[in-house]
Length: 191
Image 1 (spheres, rainbow, N blue to C red):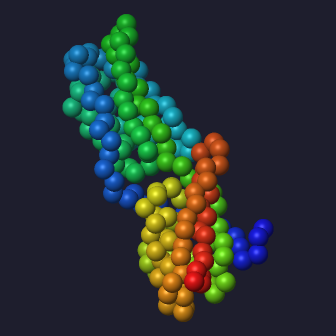
Image 2 (cartoon, rainbow, N blue to C red):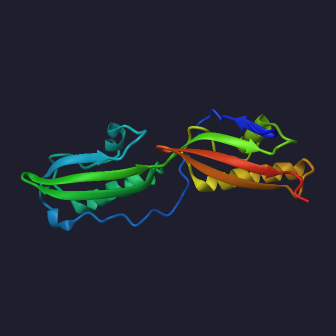
Image 3 (cartoon, rainbow, N blue to C red):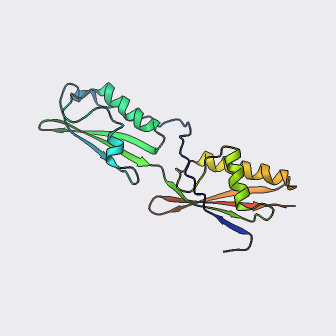
């Protein structure tokens, strides 16, 4: 570990969806309207259970395929904020139609590091995050906007501590298969 590096594991997992514009979801196909749903599948989960995702879907196997209800289910999944992508696939089956929701879960923040910080402790930074309602924590869902909010909170705190020209850069590293490390690189006196 380099000098001036504070390694902090934030233990409180705070999960709240940040309002973002959803991608244009694939519209369910009207060509299957009136047919029975032969199978309802969910794919792509890494952390959530299939049962948890299925609980968010109103339409079930054996019910009549209805494009409007399925579109509602698609939007409902997206609005949880837990997914980077949600799409629905359909394919004909002998006894009706197979409906498949394919999701891509948001990555989880595994580590948060602060490099170059000399005038603040890791706990002080964590406390500032809580005061400013910055919802960035280890084991929380990764949202780029939360990293930006955290950097602004650190910069503001450094200015209060006599470092008005301090800079805070961020670096985000993907840790396979689906984790994120967030690094805050601080220069307290860039002059």
